Amino acid sequence: MTEHLATSTPAGTAGGADGDRLPPARLAFDWHTWKEIAHLLANLPASLLGFVYVSTVLSVGIGLTVTVIGLPLLAAGLLGARELGKLERARARALLGVRVEEPSPLPLDGGGGFFPQLWMALKDPVGWRAVLYDFIRLPWGVVTFVITLTSLFVLWPVLPFIARGLTNADRAMVRALLSPSDELERRIAELESDRGVVVDTAAADLRRIERDLHDGAQARLVNLAMGLGLAKEKLLEDPDTAAAMVDEAHGEVKLALQELRDLARGIHPAVLTDRGLDAALSSVASRCTVPVRVTVDLAERPAPAIEGIAYFTVSELLQNVSKHSGARSASVDVWRSSDRLLIQVGDDGQGGARLDAGTGMKGLADRLSAVDGLFVVDSPEGGPTAITAELPWRDRTAADAAPGTPGAGHTRRTSGTR
Image 1 (cartoon, rainbow, N blue to C red):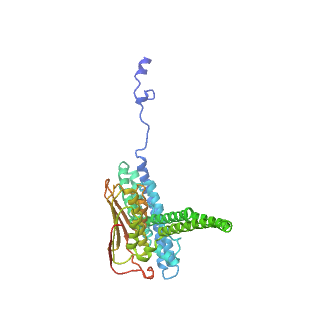
Image 2: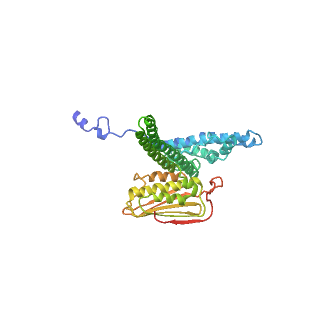
Image 3: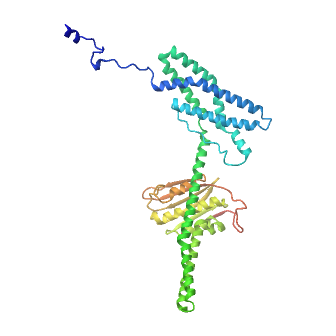
């Protein structure tokens, strides 16, 4: 009898098999739903804090604009609204999973004086959108708090759906009012990146000039000084040897002068300053290992900075033609279209040029991008190659033109192959 009772124990009791036990008790809502509920309940205190802050700052700041402290107080209030917006973005990120980029900070520590910085803070769109967000959030915070709290006790079976709908509205408000200004922030990010490119490029150029001076002309001049010193010592006792050493030193002087000319041409060629892009590009083309046709169609010269970038762009592209293309001929075309300076360098070589091929084109693209330029490579395998560079046109002022420099008058010149 005892054995019979033991075998007929109902399933699910403590004496049953492990597979017949009931699952442990758990909450009906998942973790994401509870985070959304917590966000909705926190809306009321957060929106109340923001509304009191912005209403106080704006009323006092606008009311005191007739005094000297009104505008500074309003500007400080907008900066504080920025910080409230930062807290709201952090809350939405933690509880709602909304990923909103942080706006760039105002460059108030970059100098420029008190009044320019004051005006920058007063017209800050991020601060004003944060103010608007805090204004409209108070009634919304009251509504979401009441609905969520009531639903916890009355409508709890459908509370996850209610919470999802309310928090979707929260997500939309955060993205619309607390996200960065797309165009402005994109432009700021581009300028920050371009500034880094310009700084890195300038540092690399300085290192190159220092290396060229140290390894080239400086070393040659040191040898020249030593040779002249030895010749001076042998001048009386062995005039023939001294004369030969002076002849050798004369050759060293010529080589040093040539290296210095090449270095100066690499910094900024004199022909570019004196005669403009047409003559300077023709000079570059004459040093290329393949025949180059150069066509420059410009009614006037651009600003020196744009002219210099155009020159060095063509110079490096023609060096690539000489070293890597295997071409039989090449061409350089320069013309102006509206407010842009267009450059196209083509060759009939083997093609396959890419920005990441280690030929310096990535550096050219970065340099052009730093001045709002474009750099496009069209080089299929087997050729031909056509590389187009585009620069913003900036007029040359009277102060930029050197005495005797041709600065006006239409120039269309097609140079022959060189």
